[in-house]
Length: 245
Length: 313
Image (cartoon, rainbow over the protein chains, first blue to last red):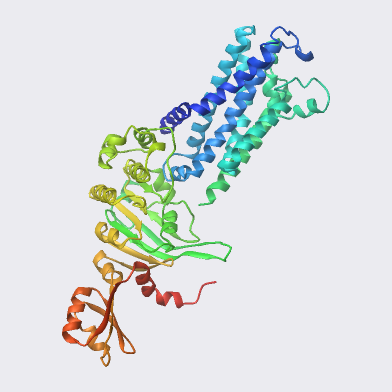
């Protein structure tokens, strides 16, 4: 209950940070139109069986949301630097409520990114039954869980100066290996590697739009495993950080 | 639980045998070396000491931010974390900035919402003199204004125990004045206040009791007048041959006298009185110098014995 008011102001803060807002929503959208607009009539993109506008709609939604989730760590690092997390430790706000506020904010930003890209996709002719839209969105939101934990981990391990390059580079690499920029096909090294990455399954949510089928078991297992591993890492990083005075 | 909260041994603040060391490249630093302090509910206590005396480390342990190596802390009969969770503690830590993109009023509301029984935000804005800048964004505040907001954040909790670590750093004279007025008004509601400072005047004017710390130990604990008498001394030096130290100590205002060859060194509680008495009795005294002993010097004098004691390591 008390944590909710805290979360509400946390949201207000991120909306007021105009530059953050502008770049995190603007870039995926810009990329999308640059890539998908000239190729809007490609029905079967690179043998994936998915239309190019749909492929990149999900690809860039996954990139944008991934960045939004990880940037929750950037805010944690900033709050650590100004001593705010220390100040919060002498209030009744629980650690759980603090992280809930952070994750909630990151998910809200992600939902906005998704909504904008869906609109952009529709404008380029992406259409599917309402049920598929919902299912696809649900899969994306589930696949974002490990990235929330990754953001928290980095926020407690790194400082304000190093977290920018680390999250930017990390997100780009994960996006590349996950197939955001081009399909990984169904064989070869990149494909094999992708199977083990949460970002791959994020992008694979696009297949719902094609067939209405969600992930195979392997997708669920991979996302669940990463969520568990990175949550443990986040708990470790948090404890290690708060031991220092 | 209610019964335990009634006046009794569990009431008030109790620090028993607190000890804390840190590792540093130069070897271990014994920041706090066994501190015992009991503070009754409703008392306003100053933790006075020079930089490096162990005040902040003591406060960190009191608030549960740092675990002590040995000893225990009890806040109204509870462990620090439990007292903090119950909303009994409000604190203004040393340093630290504010989070951005909120107005002063919004930041206070955000923090007030965390506590079970906070004060009214407008009321706190009024008391801390922040009303004129209540709508200003936190990133646009001056250093002194930021300090006042940090004080307001501690107050809005409506805590039973208010802890302030060097609260007036970065405040100008007028802001200090307003700050202490607000603090005393809060204390007058039966609240317990503990503040750390290295200004003798602040301790003297605003506390019921002063706990004097130096080199990780409590070196004196008593009413401000008493502490002031011990550390707020001035020293008179003069050339005055052939005089007995016993005669000098008897002079009004003199606490201690030392002979150094032809020179005398008088530590005075009241140097004005002492100089008059000195010249009346010994008009031949010359080369007279009166110097105010800084806190640091006074501390060094008070702790001379403990410093020469062998180190634990």
